[in-house]
Image (cartoon, rainbow over all chains, first blue to last red; front, side, top):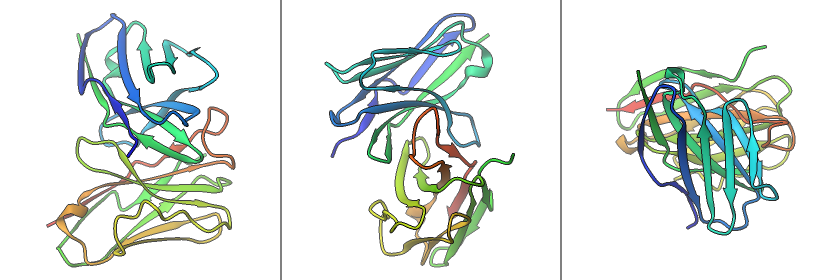
Length: 110
Length: 117
């Protein structure tokens, strides 16, 4: 079946550096993508979204890039902070269903 | 305002027993979802409710799983004759009509951690 996946299961980053989390998707019919952050013991929290008619969207310290040609999505976090340590999921939407990848665990080193 | 509330937060049960998990969505949210998250994995869609429409049950893994929702309020997920492979975190989420998007993002509860011994 079609799924959303992530390239790397873990990412270690020095505090203050920029983080890049990658995601590959395979459903070309998906027209909407979301990044979620999940901290230990909590449900996923919405970070930022992007529609398929866009290739870049910026939020506060975060930027999402979408490359539909290679079905690739990335989340960039500027000036990574200890509070950014979490599991990050990309998700795609077809109709009303979110399909999630396995997640990337981000660990911020002090 | 309160977020999505799930209870219990943790549940340990013996294999073969039935369990019932509860979700209180955010008031006014007509869309409600149940997801299952196994350890170290992503979220697996289970079921979707939207208003008074027939629910989408396509993600339920077996007939031991069922869910109900009364109007636009509380939902319960029931697992009958639990098996060890049912051990996971069960997450509930709600959103306003229209589903996903930064204008109506999906709000998740903190989940119920189910352990079947």
